[in-house]
Amino acid sequence: MDMMSGSSGQSEVSGLYHERQRLELCAVHALNNVLQERLFTQEAADEICKRLAPDARWNPHRSFLGTGNYDVNVIMAALQSVGLVAIWWDKRRPLEQLSLEGVLGFIVNVPSNVSLGFLSLPMRRRHWIAVRQLDGTYYNLDSKLKAPVPIGGEAELRLFLQEVLSQGPCELLLVVPHEAEEAGSWLSTIK
Image (cartoon, rainbow, N blue to C red; front, side, top):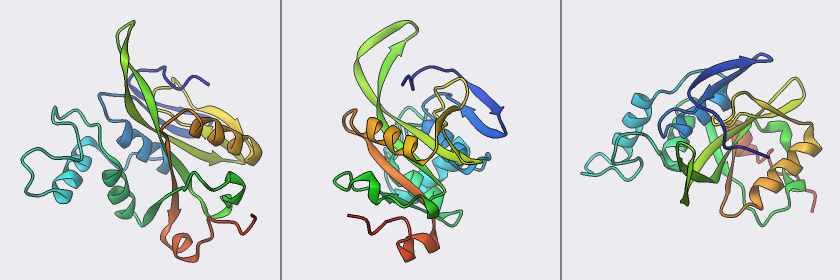
């Protein structure tokens, strides 16, 4: 699975909305890709950062260079502003306990290689990607990809998520409506 190619812009493939990587705005792209429309901009994310740390000289929720690199708090606040919730998946749970019925999509934080042009640097950064279902097929909507990549159905999604989570320090956020969070419908009782 190659989640690291791509450039800037946006594309629509198979009716899917897919923003491409620009600057360090992967969190903004992941939000828009999982929501399937351009609801958030760099300016909106910066405004959320200011609300989260109004008195901070250097805002801890974004890059001090002003290029993005937003943290999970920005993603969670952005989702709350549109009536959704990000639920942190406990990786100690088997993915069989994930009930996909109430889940709108996924935002995953993965390690990403750093490169300057064709030169790969010996350091890693964090990268946000989105996964979303359309017409029964789940898609990898990573903004570093040239276009959405089909994952498949529920079984293939679970394998994809397991593979991503096994790559090292990754985090999985479930994007659900507020009602699904309250009802706990994202969690199956299967042991």
